[in-house]
Figure 1 (cartoon, one colour):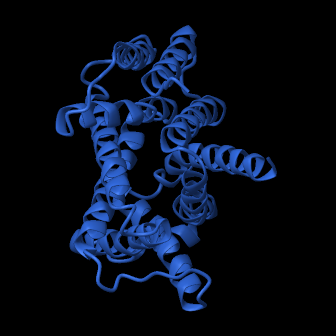
Figure 2: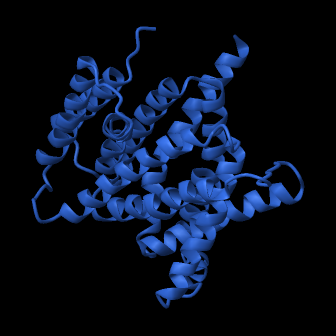
Length: 296
């Protein structure tokens, strides 16, 4: 019973902290572009994981394993997924991004049905429809909505949802061959290398790190994104998933992340709030619960 309480506390803490990353991204993006933010964020996570591995606090072993599989999963998340997420947050609002983020479990169900031929039960179909209506409601009725104004941001967020779902399925597929820590370590390593390489190719070099020292608020936001969002949160996530059934863990965490993202966006960024925001979030949460409902 004590272990179960610890698992739920870990799930809540991880979800709330990850929900705050939407706000952290908005702050960092005031002085850095999306790729620069991601380079700083994943470099911090990579350094922390390398230090832990060096002192043997964590252990990884890729010998005799199909490394290309875990590398593919890591390329999808964070190399592609977080680009979609960061540009989406930059072009929309933190609360909109959080609500759309909650669609990831729904996308997992749909992709599993199309690719893996899993049957969709009526209650699941109803949950998908509810969530879709919730997203549309929260966006279309907002004061700043226009078909041309944020369409690029919404497309990036849809990309975030699709790649997040693909990563979830692929990560589950290889979980019997690679430990949770091996998968997380690979993500941090590839993320740190990939985004710094993109910065150099784009001609920005490593100026993003200088900017972080010039603007303390941005530096603290980036430190939070790297040390908490990309390091601590993934460690907690892996712990929760190892102790709780995946659908239950996903449903609990995604809903809390969405709620935290919406609340922080409204309180600290001045995002629009009205009946459409509350109603949209309620529909999304209800839809996710319905889509993941089991007889147990």
